[in-house]
Every structure is written in C-alpha cells, then in structure tokens.
Image (cartoon, rainbow, N blue to C red; front, side):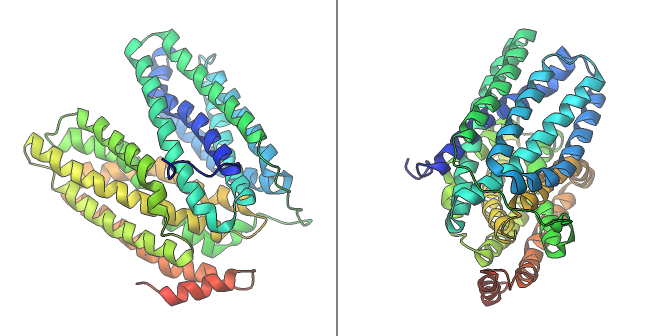
Length: 415
C-alpha cells in the first residue's frame, strides 16, 4: 500500500487535490453527453461543435496561462483556475441554449488547460527534479482512482435517468473543484519568476521542444484509441459482446492505478525516458497487430484476443506516460515550466480533437491494415523522439545541468 501513496507533505496534498477534481471529472465524462442532450436539450451535432471549439480555445490559452503561473506564482494561479473551473461547471446547471453553453464550455476548457499547466509549475517548484516523474506517477494513479469513483457516481445518475440526478452529479463536480482549490491553497507558495521587459512566449520559438511536443502528440493518439477507436472496433468489426468495452476500460483504469508508479521507477533522466518511449512504441505496434486479429473470430475468441491486446496497451501507456513526463519537465528551462508545460499539454487536446476522425478512418475504413498503419505510426514517432531529444538537450547544453543531459543521451544513443 505504501507504494500507492505519495510521501507526506506537498506530494500528498497535490495527490489529494488531484483525487478531488478527478472524481468530479469522472462523473462529468460519464454523464455530460446525456445531460446536454436530455436536460439542456441541445442537438448532438451542436454539442460536438461546441466542445471542439471550447477545447481549441483552451489549447491556445493554456500557454499564456502557464506563463502567468510562472510570473505571478503557480499556487495562487492554480487556486484561481480551480475556482474558475468550479464556476464553469456550476454554470452548466443553468444554461439552456447553445450560446450560453458555448461560453460555459470555453470557460471550462480554458480553466482546465490553465490549471493543468499551473499545477505542473507548482509541482516543479515543490518537488525535487529527481522525484518529479515518480510524483507524477502517483498523481496518475490517483487520477485513475478518482475517475473510477466519479464514473460510478455518474453510473448511478444514468441508472436513475432523472433531471435531478444529472443536476446532482454536476453539483458534485463543481464541489470537487472547490475542494481542489482549498487543498491547493494549503501548499507552500512557490516564488514567481520575474519577466524581462519585452520578453515573448519563448516556447513558440524553441523548435526542438516544439518537435518533441508534436511527436508526443502522435503517441497520445492512444487516448482516443481507448475511448473511441477500440469501442467502435469492438461493436462494428468483431462479434465480442458490447459489455467488453466497459470491462476493458476498467482493466485499463485499474492497471494504471496499481502499476503506474512501478512502471515509472526506471525513468530517471532524458536517456531513460527516450528508452521507455521506444519500448512503448514497440508495444503499441504489437498491440495494434493483436487487435487486428480480433476480427472474424468467435465471440469468446475475440474477447480473449482483445483482452490480451488491452494488457499490452496499458503497458505501453504507462511507459509512454512516464517517458513523456520526464521529457516535458527536463527540457523546460528553469523559470518557464508553466509556459512550457502549457504548450506540452496542448498535445492532449490536439490528440483528442483530431484523433477520432483519424482513428475512425483508419480502423473502420481500412480494417486490419489500418491497425498496422497505426502501429507503424506509433513506432516511428517513438523512435524519432530519441534523436529529437538529443537535439533538444544539445540546445540546453549551457543551461545548468543540460550538459549532463546531453552526455547521458549521447551515451545511450538509440539502443
């Protein structure tokens, strides 16, 4: 049990804040689509348009909000953005038309994107560099535990299928972010970094870091693969029972909760991060090949193949997560962690926005060949991150411990 709990102090407080808002997020993810259609009365196409626009806005605003966290202090910024998220969720309780819905959704996406960047800057200021990846692994485990609890609460609302039940879930979501804000306010303050007059968003001119972020975005296509691509494949191209979609989601959530910290132990620097990501890419190629074999089998044969592929998928996910956390932090200059993490986090939004269209075209349009092409894309991106990481580390050779990162990457190479 001790391996599941972060050390007492700031890391544990950050984990409790993560647990609080992830419970709300889990309930929101499960019920939001039906709430907006059945209670608010919006057409599904309008909901999709509104959420796509909202997350596009959030991905753009996340970088300057991360910069504000660096310059004004990440603790206060994170608290304000948690409160803003609570206000956005609460406003969903009263919206009844598309324009107010769009405004609330934009506030929600903006606050969530900024909160993620501010919280990363806060972690960087409170946790020693060598402990950050392990701390993030604890937070990821906590996130999955909270999502599971929230999804269960959302399931109760779906079972009741009443307006009051949906409203109660959204009220719980808003409350969870108020609790998150309270917990974040109890953390020690991190000193802001003064901004030089006329300074611009440095991350947008940092080509190596942009390249790392783009390649990581490709690897993050595993997220809509689990939430959309695989469920559609199961229901449209296999004879497996539909309940398998839920079972595989629970398998993924539980495995990450239990084993993410252990999977992150081997990642201690840029070289080990690149190695973990290469292994993840190889596992993703194997995963996609296994999933492709599930078509045309008996129902229970398909279940066995899909379960085996899902075990490979979660192993690849944990390695990729640990490696990307290390890269995102170690390649961010001191004093600009919020700004750089805000940009690095846009990869998640882009993958979730563009991924569904790409995955449905590949998997449902091309079948087994689509799976193999997707696996090849994961493998290529994972191996490309090695030389790109060395390039990025080389540009930081004069920045403190950047030289050791260069030496470490050069020593390991692409093994």
